[in-house]
Length: 478
Image (tube, rainbow, N blue to C red; front, side, top):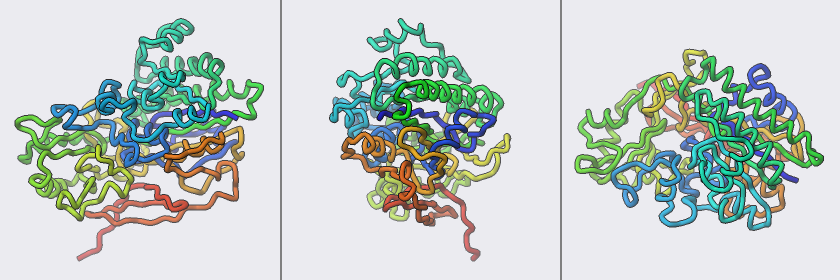
């Protein structure tokens, strides 16, 4: 038995249809669909990558955001985890910046293997298999230009196409690397392909833009179809399970809020690193992280200011008591309170209001490279947390929709279990409902009321909580 994983970066479940994504829709209809699948918080790509590959949430694996600040490593600037050099700094001499073993490492200990083909950033590809070189495993990324794997791919298929929006040529190229090199030559127990669309087009064109809905989605779907056709043509096709998922969903960013500028106008010494005139560091994002040089001095006035802004949602804290703000929402509620996490995390006040294309889900955001009207993710909006998760072929049930909750952390322990490999260090659940209908039960649901008219909806399955989304609630009248 072996498995193929395809991750379609940023694909919202409600974008899957027979018209727009026929290959994906056919797999969804014939296999097992997890209708309540979710991402992790913050719902950012490298955080999701790390959670998928370790079977743990950020509180355990330590990759707490796409953009991080560590005053002991680079006090004057933020760290971008899309760059391998910044991940090396974050690792502080260790082999990996992750605090938990990855799927590739656990497979290797059992004499098994993981191969990775990535169309994402160099940092994301590295996080999918940090020990690939040491283990002699296959890991190729579109940004690779040197090394034996890059040379081998170039010799076989020619140079990697340049990036574009939509990223059509690169999507086609990574499909070729997958089906012409990685799958037939390596025959790994698990082969993972990361597709950069529709994420790129959603960000820079918009979720409902004609190019996103048309060419970008079609290219991602064609990739799914090509890999499925390769699987179906193998003599052992019945023993190859296919898993297709997305790492997060999306909302439309209706208004950019430059948080550093807002704070500086209010008299706070804010910036993107500690300098002579800065004691508050902000990492721009859909859920900006905030680090404080003097927490006892700045946390209370900062929290008061943010609570008064109409664009701000609930404010989260790594350690509310240590900040002297015990009423703030603790990041531990979302399994995100790692020591690398920000002192404070700002959420934005999103809503289900339709965007200009009629798609539900909008929110303010803070990201300088994404235009207003572009897709964003990272926060707690239910459209950001909702993910595609389906399993087809091999041992998986046919024509089934799972009632139970699931998230990205459940994939690694599930695969390891099916391969007869121990999953020590993973915290996710083995998704037995994927092959055993009797194991499928609906989750319990609850709601945690938060300050200022918000609530966190959650699902509970087998004692494990899954955030379903942030909601606005009616406040009682005075």
